[in-house]
Image 1 (cartoon, rainbow, N blue to C red):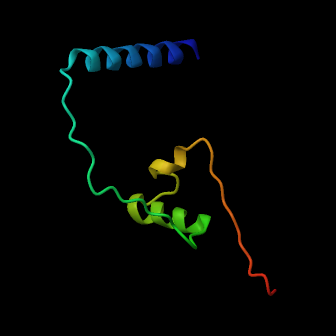
Image 2 (image 1 turned 90 degrees about the horizontal axis):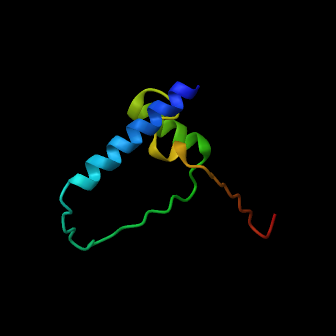
Image 3 (image 1 turned 90 degrees about the vertical axis):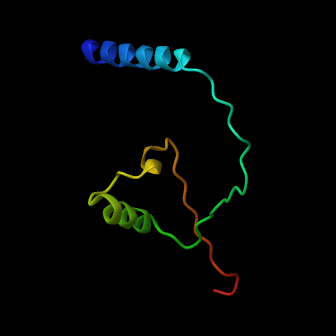
Length: 78
């Protein structure tokens, strides 16, 4: 366990060192930013997207989010 923590620490320090040594590039301002809000997608929809793209579940970038929330809505007349 300690070896794994030490290895991760050394890898992180190496990446920080590499990033500090690289020249800072001037990023152009973002243009035409689009925000997509999924409406009607269930948890199974996201699993299906992962299976489609990677042939296994849990490979999407959002699978590692610390917090995942869902919501259900119902019409007033039921």
